[in-house]
Image (cartoon, rainbow, N blue to C red; front, side):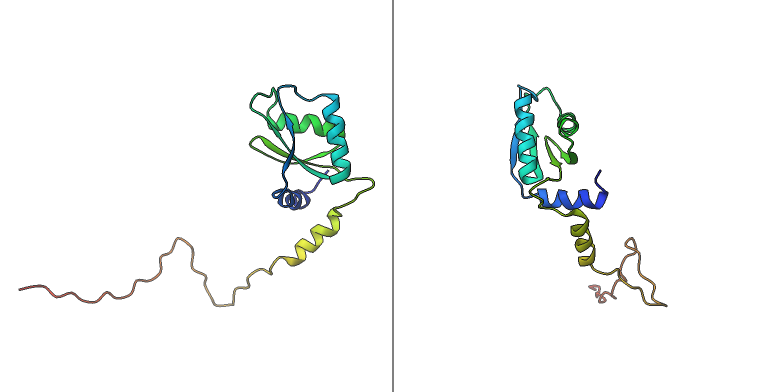
Length: 137
């Protein structure tokens, strides 16, 4: 089971990935599951999609495939979904280490000086004095 930080990290990595499998009218069969299993072993992180003529919605297909193959659903957006399963031979992601590194790279929180009152976003900036206009006589 992935933590939310691990899931967020993998979701970011999967943004640049291309879709390598499509669930279509034929549905999910043994041949397709075998190919997805091989791809997960080789890549660990894959992106799939469901076609409009499919009997499955993206969430249903993602859950079905992940249950069959022991993978984790990273994200489901529209018709696309991302699956992750740690490889036994080709480990590309050490999630614990990578999440620690990502945490270290985050900038420190902004420190507010004592006596300084931050202005709320809803407050407007003070307006400058407008130059006086002269009336015509």
